[in-house]
Amino acid sequence: MKKKEIQQLKTELSSKKKIVIVTHKNPDGDAIGSSLAVYIYLKKQGHNVQVIVPNEYPEFLKWMPQNEFIIIYEKHKTKAKKLILEAELIFTLDFNAFSRAGDMQEILEKATANFVLIDHHQQPDNYAKYTYTDVTICSTAQMVYHFIEFMDGLDVLDKEIATTIYTGIMTDTGSFRFRSTSSTTHRVVADLIDHGADNAFIHESVFDNNSLEKMQLLGVALNNLKIIPEYHTAYITLSQKELDANHFKKGDYEGFVNYALSVENVILAAIFVESKEDDLIKISFRSKGSFSVNKFARNHFEGGGHDNASGGKSNRSLEDTISYFISKLHGYKIELSHD
Image 1 (spheres, rainbow, N blue to C red):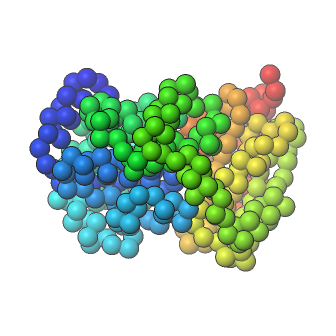
Image 2: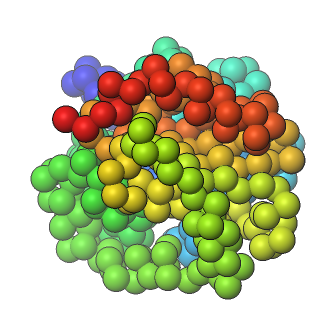
């Protein structure tokens, strides 16, 4: 964020405002963690603040402080629309194009408030008055820490803010193992722990409260794991029938794709999940080294994200999606070769 923007935003936040915080459809740990952190911080400054998310999010994120005040747009559309239209300032966190907000896109486009964009994904749209974007930072949650720092607000950092930021960073870095985890990230995390973030409790709350059905679904996913050795690629499929048979709940297959990536000699990994409700195939991509799944997802699956972690979708059947995916690998054979 440029110094001029920082000063202008400080000025705008110097008087009480009606503020709405929104994040992307199917919110993950970074989206919810960063949104709650900004919510708690701005409430401490005396602002009238609401967090609105497009749809439901996983149960393993609902222990976080002040989570109970989040408004789910698909359940409370009239209230959410009114808040967005009356807002004087809207923060968009962990996404950079209104289309990523699902059904909220139309009402966001009608809003008259100034927008604040805080995000670490590539190719942001130009809709915000205040833009803080950096693809080199591991998570939006870490950027929120720096945003609070820009606002000279670190003196109000408390256990609740530290906990929500820590959760966002932890979940978006694969528990600090991804390449995007920098020395600065570790210094930020150390400060969060100093301010009350209980790292062991947070990890257990997110990762160690698995239902039997989720673990059984993981077994199905691993049984469906396929390897394509000549392209150093692995992929997992989950059909709607398999999800239903294991009483699937939102977030249950989060992280499954990393098992495919962990296979020896695999550079590209994907998971393809059938969703009858959305009438499409949801896709997550992961990669190692220099292979860009952001480019791959943008080129072939209407998606994008980061170079080593991206998402996409397909309107084909599950079987046809897999066939299409495999047909595209040949064009990347050199990039998928070992150095």
